[in-house]
Image (cartoon, rainbow, N blue to C red; front, side, top):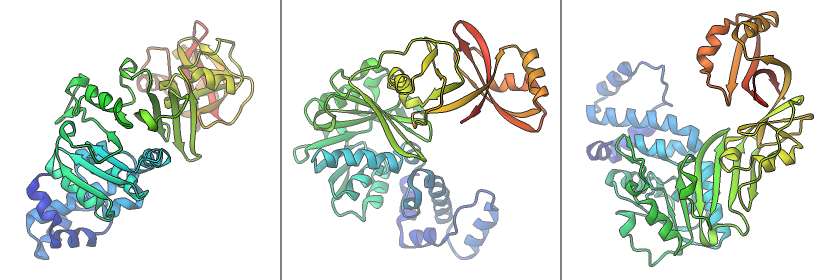
Length: 391
């Protein structure tokens, strides 16, 4: 979105037209919709702006739920925005720490600032892009305790705040920036600020762990089994005795596994009746050993993140599978086995073996009426195919 499109959108006619549109339908005839709006007297630029925004609002429901219906978005801003349920976790951390005046540096479209303002925190949101800051201003308008300005995070006056939240920009346009010194603000600046003020720094979940300050709390977050971020917390925002955490959000609600350090792995043992696939946040936080001990489980292989046990214990931190058959990882014998079991729909998971699941599935030629899950991995030192069913 450029400034001219934003002006169209923020006009009285633009907002009225946007709110009057039915929910965006990807299968709808867009040409017909444009034609109808043009016949109603709406100028082309306005029609393009509101239809683009309607499409973004539809996509945003996955992150913002019903709040999306009253928000504005940019393409990049929506992609990078914190999910509202995760932003609520961030805001709750500031509230519990008793920190009431927060600077959100690199606020994007204002997702985290919105969650903070909803808890009656005073939040000053800053973004260097004028269009993005204008969108954040619109999204934060219902909350009088929230303000937005255009500016550079590294030059923002922080004299009136008692904590900061930073989401460094890790892209330059469409190009991903590999060097943390090139991020905006740089990672050195973010962590340097965190040494002076209580701070939360949002990073990608795959960031080099060696970059994390040894005395900070690192919390990996997953939503619906998808690891979405690493939050690094300092000062009053970090919890006593916790340096590693895996926060898992799903249909069960929220659950967290925490520790003072990376956990020691569980020993390798024989395949049991059940296999557990740890949540990605648990893997990233290196808390697989603690999870294994809570399940009375053992590792299938010392370098592979699958656990096995003789009984099934419900846990939000892993997906549990019942082992139906332990098979050789051989294409011909697997093809015969699937045919004998009338299996046609096959989910393939793999760790520790160099196999493309999609390509391998096509070689098996499964055509039956039943469905199954196949785990391709190593049990001890051997390549195996485990036919399993979800518990």
